[in-house]
View 1 (cartoon, helix red, strand yellow):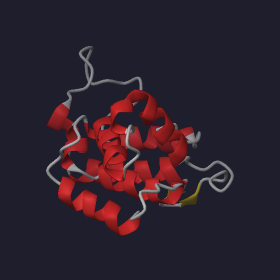
View 2 (cartoon, rainbow, N blue to C red; view 1 turned 135 degrees about the vertical axis):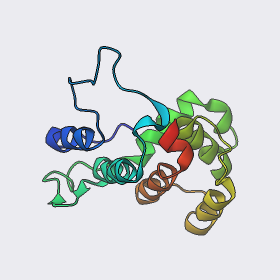
View 3 (tube, rainbow, N blue to C red; view 1 turned 30 degrees about the vertical axis):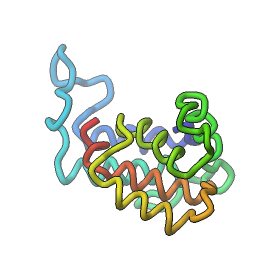
Length: 150
């Protein structure tokens, strides 16, 4: 995401709450993947962590540098344009959305695609993805079941 540097203690705490204590795996095999650590509690922690990374907001307040070090949606889009140039050829919102979905969930066609497309049409009718819109879009995409399991 190329998100700004945030408080490492918040990141460590989030990992602990999700059952993935840094440097303390349950066995030499490491942590089980997939659905093994996804439940209603960990999904909230993951979503709150994403809010923190993108905005600096957290349950107890804000990161002290949140207003100075902001997430750059333009920088993420530039990286995605390099990674998925075919999606950016025509410069449409659909192409940008395809690249974002490929990056975040591994496919451009999650089940919720129609709802996400409607969100894009409603919030960015000109196809301009400013930083505030990118934060909202990334929070929406990272709430998808496909993201939770990728």
